[in-house]
Length: 176
Image (cartoon, rainbow, N blue to C red; front, side, top):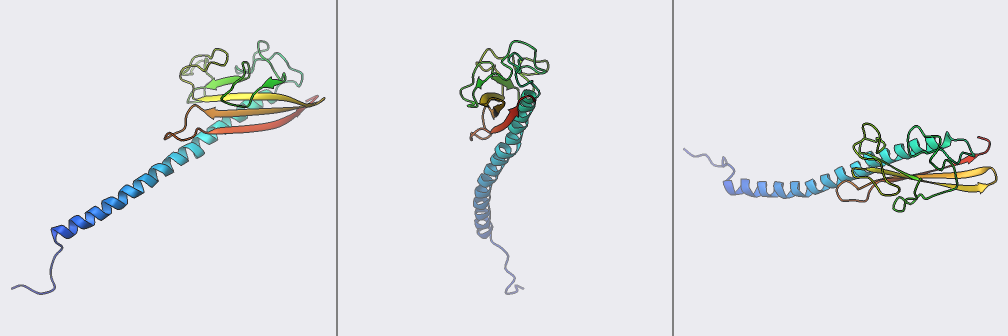
């Protein structure tokens, strides 16, 4: 005996519903990929570039106002072989100036040091395996005032997007 009103779902109805669900999921997956890329670039990588720029800034601020020889491309800074707080450099990460640039690997290790996965750079030529680049510029604002700007950037962005870059600027006075 067949009862009326107790019909099941047909295979065609299930296929149509599955097709609609798959179409919606494909659209959401594109949005999920964009969200992951944005989070990685603007969250994680931007935070790391800011942290590394701050590390370099602290190293520069620890120098004496008139220091013209410390090499801050190493850590701790060497007493000779560098520019210290001599006026010069650039905060354009695409146009580094010799003695005013250093490179870090993906883990934040200074290239050329123990534990780093990249060799030491040669002048402004980036070493193989670098991931973060830091450049700095020292400007004389007045007799007893210098402006220090540090820029830090990644070698590439996640998901073929713009790389993360951070800038920090401080003023240093003499005699401090």
